[in-house]
Image (tube, rainbow, N blue to C red; front, side, top):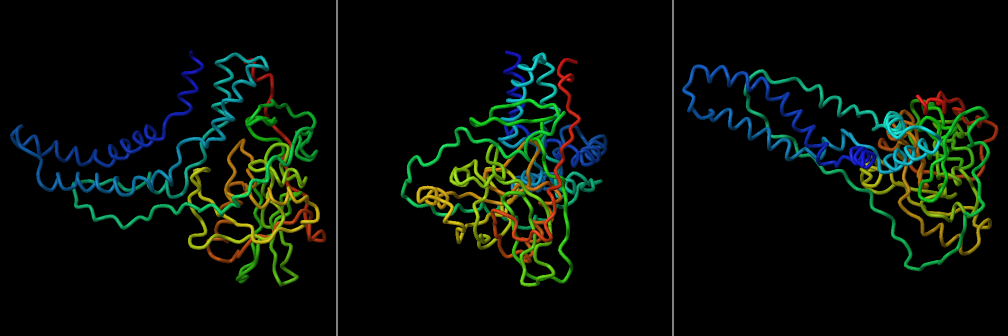
Length: 387
């Protein structure tokens, strides 16, 4: 019973979290107003009603939160992603199997899998100057609801069972380094090795900025290595590394096996030419609960490597995007970047400098390509489970 209670706490509903945050903001904003009203109350009869100005100020505060509350929540993410919740619960089970007590397993899983860092916008909201006296609140500017990326239309044809990942293994370069302690969890039917709550061999958060003055170029991505780079008509610029991103999950992480490409929600980004959606390029991803840049396949490459059924399955895949990767997560075909990498790539996309994405199975610029900046070390120790 205690275990179930703890898990319920980990999955605290969004409404409760938001209610607590709203109450906190209202409390801190209204304390000075309450003090001022208390001072007036000492001089007025106990039965006196609030002044019209105070009532109007309270109403304006309520209207403000009613209109922009959703926007504040989207800038201030307090909860784990759905995948992180599942990872956290799976870690508890894995730690108990490894010999940890139930309490120690829960404590360690909660410590390792935590919500993402608050955004800059949220930090600004938290540090808004407090009012020292009741004042008229100007009507808030119109706040547009985040645009939700529309999914690409899929063919009505069902290619039927076409692939099997039974017997497939992840590529050796993504396995845990020798001497690194890890536990194996089961997530959506696939094994995943985690060390300290993080996947083995994640990328360092490397960012190489594009030289100033470069107006337009395409983003290139090497599926096998995870490298993001510049594709340009300028031979001096083309191939320059920008960042590194994971694509695909578990046994199909950056794995160009045709069966991986044909497996929805597991395989990496298929090779080909992609474009950004029309309208807002950076949109709110309802599934990932974070900002994303949706990309859409316009031309599939390397068709000679796929069977007709694999090709049909690849073309039926959708919901592909570029976004930030949180601790412990992998990717469902999307390009998952570390925080600084995502912030920079998002700025290139939003400004219109990056005009699309080319995905290659193997490195198209071996002369300038770099080895992946993989983090192989870990401070996690299985002996910590028994403390």
